[in-house]
Image 1 (cartoon, rainbow, N blue to C red):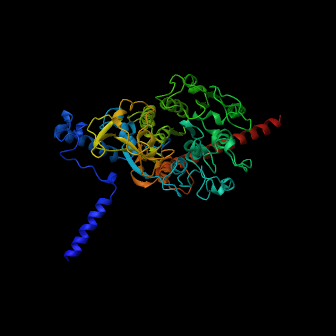
Image 2: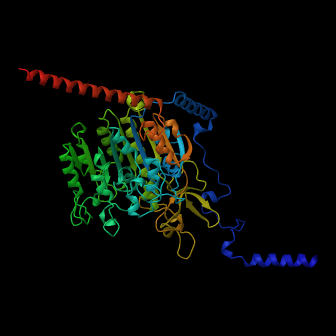
Length: 571
């Protein structure tokens, strides 16, 4: 037994001695270096909390106030037909992005405009063939009520990515809420600060085997095999040509290569077509008062009462991040939303508007956390603008008949980590590692190219203390743990916020495509076999009665004209 114990002890000693020294944890002892960060000092005392928050009565009072708000919101659910539907999609608007943006705009206790909505839920975002989704399959879930394959536009899961022939089959094509709204006589519009042909807006009006077919240069090599690029579908497609308002970026997909758009940026189409000119000609043939605009001044000059159709392209590619934009030239997301609503509200039948805060996503992909948070603020302002335009917080009929839903298509890998003190700058370092004896940023990414900005080639972190004078620069990249050519989306659930008719349907946890079904139900849209509310059935009966009356009037008028002709023929 003694021999066994001795051998066991020798084995343990050998294993311990064989461990790589750089994997052993740093133990803080009496001989450890002098503290280099306040939080490394054993005598460090956290800062005091705000004075009013120390009082228990503050928390009791605010808790009761919020409870009363929720009781009021849930006491009498709004079960009217949503005559108007406004869908806001924050591209990549993860829950950590929301939390970080609150601190960015003023503090942990702040709320974004849509976070005050009375009904919230969580949506599961996977595609049918990917755990972590993209904006195409998630847009199909939200706008069409169907989950499909990664990267495909407006087609069912029977269509693999890049498959043209299967995307042409009518049985594989899906219908968006904007298409249903047009069939019902309602106005429709799309606002985005990305390319108008990008994945999310494209799903509203186009079908394609790949989200990348934005113009003819990306179609399959055999001339497209009968498939039509997304930009052309916006101008000549059944849904696209009937959109009342279209505002965004991406003019390069509408102008031929070798020419410049109205902002002096080059086109890239190889078929020689100028789709903007084609849109103007088509609208003239239909005797519609149409306006094309390319800058903020042109948009501001629009008189909604004198325009039937509005088309705006403000950049060749995506529009600029608001912090970096020429704000005299490019309109903000809130300004575009306001202009769209001015036109859409003229239709007494109602409208459906899709608004995408699309620049949160590319900012995250580049590990540009400050720009991602700032673009979230832009979305917050656009939602605030829409709420005000549709009646604010009052109880007038317009507000009561408008469903506003805010959600994200997918998440990102941004995290809020460490133990930063209350009120700490969200863009700065917030805690200190006692292992490598350096501070670290509160905001970090799981992956991305910024890995190379924050790690030495030989291993180990670069000291963030040497970077803190740059962390407010919009182009400063925040650290990533794994090198990757483009920071990835995240697979976690996303938040859903809703107010207005049937907003309570969006409470709970559900598959993302359920959002699409909730929108159709609330708006009294979709196929006849879909569920209908009592208010919807009454609306449909009213429409049928109105239609019947119109037919009776027309028939009586026709009979009168026949009788009159017969009577006159006698003389």
